Length: 355
Ligand code: TLP
Image 1 (cartoon, rainbow, N blue to C red):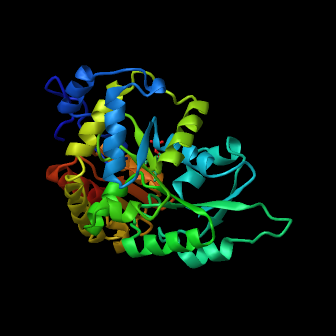
Image 2 (cartoon, rainbow, N blue to C red):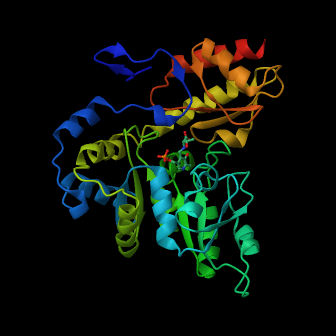
């Protein structure tokens, strides 16, 4: 439970595998936040926000970037910026934007989602071509495709460079834009052993989160070309996301990008070990392709317990996970999970599965 301490005291004494959003800011982040030079960011005069946006843009190979409150806001700003009300947007049926962002694109953007099967975590060019309906007078115009890398609901599955390029090519050939929900795109790049720019260059815009595995307390980035980001800035303002002395939180985001990207591999290694050990427990299984990054989808159908009961029993033993369905659980590895925690989680799973 390293770094889960405030003033030398443990904040919690559990192995919390619910999400990498539970990561706490480091001491260095808190110090940078306290000392950050700030200004009014609506006037684009906050030097720390400006530095974060420049750093973020250069890291993902884009001309410009915008600091937003959350991944949800970043995705919504992206969909609003790329489209006009009444447009159709092609995206995965299991994507976070479609299923877990409160329907913002429909409610706020007046957009019509057209879903394709992404149960394996990837959208293929053929699926987009099949979903496109042309310009018949009855059809809503399609302007945008959204992909997700890594793909949360399929257990952190990654879309590789070749697959990303192929999708972007097909999308662009049809005159559409491609947005990447890259909440965990640094995890995807680490898992593939490629520069993150290889994954982000082919897309028109990318959102990624500073507040998940990278451990910043708040914030996400939306990056794209200069013209896109200038328009996105206005949509962020419409949503009430124009912040003032936001350098206080952006300071932690800079440390997240400078210090936290390289260590994501450690989380992946621990996720692999956990997956392998869990797979050996009778009644429990983890699909191999679903532990490429830091997210595990754990099937407990072969045990005598339902997912909610399983979660409760694990909690009694000091391990927290989330349910993903009636028979599946999700565990996410992050900076506060060390090797001992993995041992504790394995022992707890073994005990609960034997009930
Ligand atoms: N995901 C969270 C929860 O919403 C479930 C999590 O714990 O995994 N895109 C993807 C792929 C995400 O996983 C998330 C958050 C978001 C977007 C939204 O980011 P935030 O929470 O910052 O709005």
